[in-house]
Image (cartoon, rainbow, N blue to C red; front, side, top):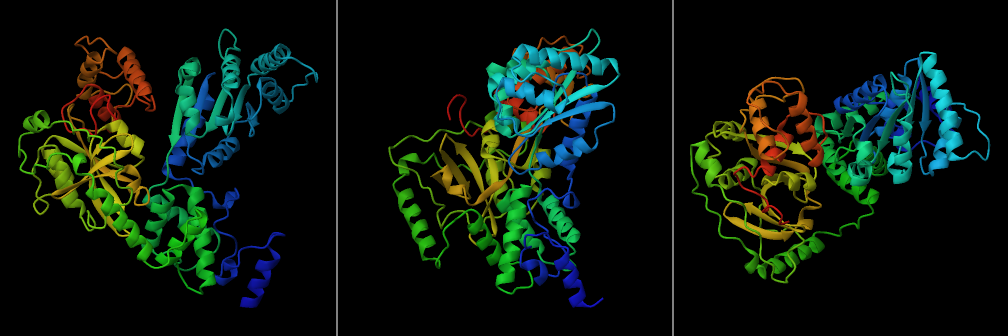
Length: 553
């Protein structure tokens, strides 16, 4: 078949609206990065599959709530569609996609979804009675009813409370209605609040859908291009890594960046995406002003430097790098909490200084972090995390938010990026509400936390104490050395009474752990992993450096 024939077929297969101009230019068969929910482009990462597994698990339970939360564009609705496609035949499903309704409208919508005839002027009691009659009849037939509500963060508290009351509909053997809520993180915050604590107690499963990591972003982009018929390399690995940083792993933002980048490459008649195209795409999507040369940037940096000069009263005592070398016991008892900066009335710098930390390697930054723990790390002699392990510490490397680091209250190495996209590394050593203390080598600076906004995409490495001889995540029902350690810490926190016979993570010990996770804002899944251990150590005032003193932020 000739090239002209192929192009003619492609044009005939198009929708009434025109595809992007770059489709023909790059020899594609379809629009690879449309934000429309096309099932052909479905990419289920490991965390998407895990989220779907939680929802499917919820379908098997009798009554209660299942909660799935995630940031905008992370794929919650995609998972919802997959769930609907896999619902067994014996389940009657009601799906609400626009939950901006009051209590009466909610009940009417549920009845409509289930085909329940109700009077036009039916009140709340009448609607609930009609629904209960239908649920009892369905149960008698051996069937189950599940209600799925997408964008549930739009539900008012009184509507959520009505949903809780619906889970009271039951027989002597089982609950009659299972409810699955999907929404943005604020939904989780609402449910965790005191007003809805009764609803929170009825959650039988919950999962927070995080962004894609670097490898998943690469696989995601490759998958969509392959489906669209791409037969050549359009996004080099370095550009994929940059897209990952800029999008923070959010699929919808990945689509927008890739789509705009391909359009930019087409307009400049380039064969593949480069850094300049990515930067321009990012500016256009987020409506950022274009840079005319480097002089505005230099001016901003110089302004930041001048602001720093007046902050001498903010500076902490000089960093002592001599430290303690060897014994973990000495490390963990001699490290002092980080002092808080003194307020001078002057505003801290909001632009990253041009003479600070650029070019710092991850090994040198780790040496700064180790010094805060009282350790003298020599980059040329050992691998950072192996060195930490020999000193009784563990590394935690993740991509997350500043609020997560604030919750850990431990200093961390941040991965930042310069104006050309090259990474450099600095230690976040102190933190208040809006200000931060940074360390690099023999220098330390105090800045407004906004100084890292355009340079940090959530990547960090921190150290935590391996107090319970942690080997792997301890799941509910599991056994291990951490069981005794956990029981002692929870007893110290007043959440549990240690018996001395603990050998398994179950019963009242498991319940106490879940209560702690819930109070700390963690997913109360009863699994004892690094994040839960770090929060336990913070709550029990475990020795080690802190970002701030307890009660002072």
